[in-house]
Structures are given as structure tokens and as C-alpha cells.
Length: 395
Image (cartoon, rainbow, N blue to C red; front, side):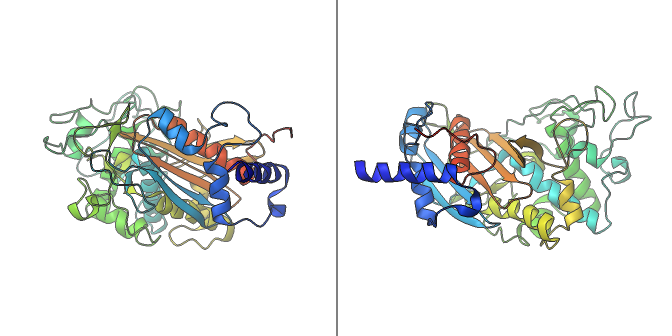
């Protein structure tokens, strides 16, 4: 075991010192072993621990990961328990709630509809809304609210949602009731506190407006829109925006767990705010979604988006750090598109390079999974020598 650990440490050191084109010929299993094991050199933090030891220390029942390399899913694996009550194990096919990563997936559907001429990023959203209207007031009278502003959290909304979800046995509101803050909604109304394009403020309510807009324009249930516009074209056959999750898919779904590795009562909560928080998926299928953007930008041959439309998802609107759907961040010399997510009992993260074909998706069935998501992102970046990583000094 000591010899194997030393060998893995040497491989990790070699990987961090070589440029990507000169990486040693390693199998996906080799990379997975580097990421799962203690890190060398040890820069403190969690480096001295294996992934299993990190999960035990943080009381994380289950983790699933998919790594993107060279514009493809290089490997995916599951770790730990999908359900502490039944003892079911996590596999790459286990479904997790994507939480707020639902937002950029929904943004892709809007962009496809824009490419078909059915909607526009820069028109007044009220032109498309039929069953509810954005209020005209001192903030919106002279500066109409556009889908681009809603999808980049710069529309001036003040809700800051954050949706808590609903127990499957509880009554659930219609989307218009959610926007108005009417019972049985468990959140307040969407409201405006400043003019569009004044500042960034994260708004789940803004994404809920986009959901209603697409339903009004296309005349179909939102889950069907997402199936036809994004999921099926990308081969995301296991994924769904259906809320609640149908029984046949629930058989593959992870249970929600709260802090301390505790089962969370109901197996999961229901999110009628589907565009903002309603996607069930796997890391491998979310990776296909990220690769679609990367390939469209590189070759203008996406299955769903053209290069011009995909570029909208990775180009800041000029206020705050968001593009259409994604947060954009510079790490080292690289620019990345990313989004995190946290629903009741689930935490996840997606990060991918804008110009280079790599990235990672991590999903956990725990409310306290953020630390392991960050740790795995860092380990993948180190093992694959991403340009986001500060190269360690050899010891």
C-alpha cells in the first residue's frame, strides 16, 4: 500500500509540473486514483486525506463525479450511500437534484427558442408573458425588464430566492401564485427594488418568470419543453424536470440528507419552480450539457446551440459576474463558466473551461456537501493540470 501511495504521489507531482499536451499517458482509472487518494505534495487542508476519509469527516453520505477532458466525459464514479435508510449505494446512474444548476440548463432552452425566432433576449419580457405580467412601476416604466436581465440576475428584482421546496404531501402552488407570494406558496412575492441593469442580485424569482414565459410562448408544460429543447437532443435521457419525480425515476434517485448524515424525513422535496431548482440528473449527463457549450463555441456545431448563442452563456452581460445562465470567473489564465446548487438535502457544483475542453461536475446528497464539492474541483484541476491551479513547489 505504501508503494502504491508513493507511486500515485509521483504521478500527481508529474501532472502538476507538465503542460496539458505533455501529460503522461494515464487511464481514467489512474486519474480517479489520484483524485481519490491523499494529495502530494501535502498543502494541508484535506490533502492528507483520501476522499473516503473526507466524506467520513464531513458526514457526507454520497458523492458522484464526472470529469470532462478533451471535450468528452473522461470518467464518472459514485461513492458512498445514495440512501442511509436503505443502504443503497451511489453509482454513476444515481439521480441527484441539480438545484440551482437547473438555471443555466433552462437558459439553454430559452436560447434555443431565441434561435428559432420565438423569443428574444432583448425584448420587453412582458411582450411574451400572457398569464402574468411584470409590474410597471417607477423602476420598470422607463427601462423594460428583458429576458437577458432576468437570466443574468440584473433585472432589479429584490426577492433573492432561494426556494425551500415542498414536502411531497403538502399542497403546492401554481407558478403565478409563487410569483405573487400567494398561499400555498412558502416564499414572498417577486418584486422590484431598483432599475434593470443597476446591479447584480441573485434572483430565483427572475428565473421563475423565464419558466412562465417559455410556457406561455410555447404552450407546453415546462418539463416537456426541457425534454424537447435540451435533454433529448443532448442525450440526457435519465434527466428530467418533472416535479414531483415519477416513481420509475425515483427508484434511481438519491435521498436528501441533512447535516450530520441524517436522512431528511421525506426522501426529497418538490420544486414547482422547475427552471430555478427542478432538474434531476447525474454528473455524467450534466457534463454532456457543459460539453455542448464548449463544442458549440469551438466548432459552431452544437446539437442545440450555435456558436453565437452558446457565447451568450459565457460572456458577462457587463454588470456583475453573470452571463446568460452562468457565472463567469477568471482563474489563473483561464476563464470558466460555473454554477453551484443547493436544495434541501443536496449540494452540487459545475465548472468548465470556456475555451478548453475540460471541466468537472460534482453532486452530493447532503446539505453540507459544499466543502467536498470544492475539494474535488481542486483535485481534478491538480490532476489534469488545469490553468486554474497555482503550481505547487516540488518537495
